[in-house]
Length: 235
Length: 235
DNA sequence: CGCCGCATTGACGTTCGTCAAGTCTAGTGG
DNA sequence: CCACTAGACTTGACGAACGTCAATGCGGCG
Image (cartoon, rainbow over all chains, first blue to last red; front, side, top):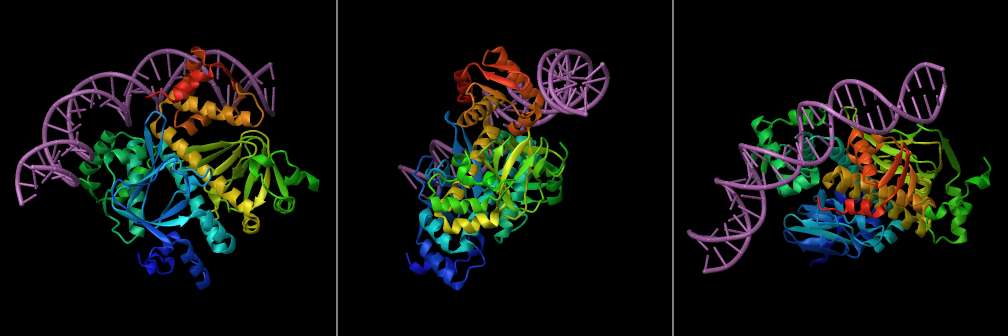
């Protein structure tokens, strides 16, 4: 792999996964941090519950899911991550990963050894701040998921999910009305605390109501406002 | 307030909320960080959704709840926090708090101005590491809540909740079998994604089955194993 | 001592899960 | 390149778990 290919300094995703306000000198330091990349194929796991935690990973391409496992085999999808997002933060506390990260399509990640990241962030204040903000953002995101799981009905959950997904895709240059679902109905259901049949039925209902057009994994949002109304509907 | 009273160096909760392996010199620095405390009465809010984020808070005494608000007025309790735990991490990402923190009983917190905490953690590596671990721990905790909300039935949720609560109290020197619920049934329900009636009914059922003895807010665990079995029961 | 918030319990309704049948799709191997 | 198959999806019928609504009891605080 060509060294210049793993430089943050000329990565078009830098603004997404790294702090914006670094000096040229600091950027050079950053390139020392991210020295390797890793390619994954669909269904490959980036890390697994129980794996020793060594690195955080910045997603360069592809979509991942993270999931936690219950003792009895049930599992819960805790998030879907895409380009520019960081995964592995769960491993920091005990140096062990506590969830699985699985590629939903062929993907590539930047490997960021965490001990080096910590050392570097002692010297580069902007990096330290960035790391704190990333972790805080994840905490806030999970608050939102708790709200969803704890108090929303199926239609609201799915509407919230679709709007969030398309918004994040839009931030990456994709359409605000069309998207491809990289995950199965079952994975969506696990994330939303619903069974796959309920996800399917609810999507069909949205389609009937003219809110979306569904064709397998391809989805078109026909009535954004209707989706928004569903989200803020009084139960 | 007597200055010595706000020193981490002689605080009996230090091992809970601060790193264990600080040198004497580092401990002195720590005392510079935590200069004020704040007392709250029952129902007082420590911070509110929308408040500017300035400080993290370490709980010295009392129990808090944090909750997020939906636009339509619904809310979701995201956690109950007790002595030695840190609240306010949600505010870091955008310098604005995104949830409310409410005292469930008279309480006292140590105020840790976050800009100073960040500066100090540039110099005290153990403190930096500690901050990272705290945030990661919160992320992992929330994964557990997502699993609970997304895939457990009412009895499992409540059993999980009670075991977690009594375990944390035990770590603070309290009984492993007796506890006082500082929160209402409604607050428990909000946290667990259940209605207060369901919480009440489920508690009554546990009492009927001889698993717990309930008298208002006072609760005695009579059969720990039964609770554990409920948690790991295949749905 | 009285009131108000909290809790309990019952009857009933709704939403979503379960089970099942059948179609479709995409990936695999001949 | 096509046929085959396993997984993914849809849809329906039914049931269980939990929510809703309502009545009542209780206890702590002013």
